[in-house]
Length: 263
Image (tube, rainbow, N blue to C red; front, side, top):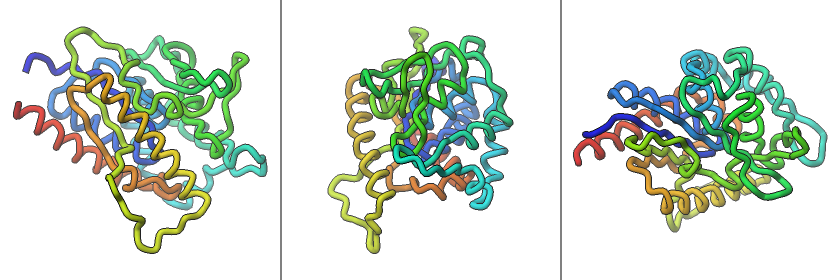
């Protein structure tokens, strides 16, 4: 193997993105050197915290969550345009990982959000880390959009679910991507599935994310591609399953690396 440098790209995907914690740990345990990271939505969160050198502290906080603690973080609102303000979650994370300037991070970092009115991706390479993350995770209709600099930002997954084309490259690194929006072809509904407001909304977003991620994968062709089905996790209570989801990510990354290292 010529290099173990890795340009790591993490997709959007809600609580499934906690799989990135275990995946990062698996990469490092095998001697891979993550030299840059780019993420959209939950990928921007985990990737940003990793780039700030605070993944262990975040992991300890996340794994301590239970359903009761999770409910205390959900700041529901009566506004017609969104269900959650999202401020309590960001304040809790900020108490674990102090905000920093993106330019001061130990490795190059990129977060993707979407400008609601221009329809263009917003690429954050500098400025406040948590402003970038907060913009990137603003799922439409669920979280309050972020307004600053005369722009209104929503979730990065709307325009770039899997930002393989935005990650910094050093000329000899491996492009490693983890996409948690895979869809099983011709899948029938689960027995007893409840097509309620939340399940229809989240699955619709998931299908759109899957389609965008598939196109980005075809264009940029990662050297190592890890996939997780969008049907594994996704409901709000799954945000309290950080340890379980992280372990799933570690296993999936281990399998992908095993296949790559055989070549």
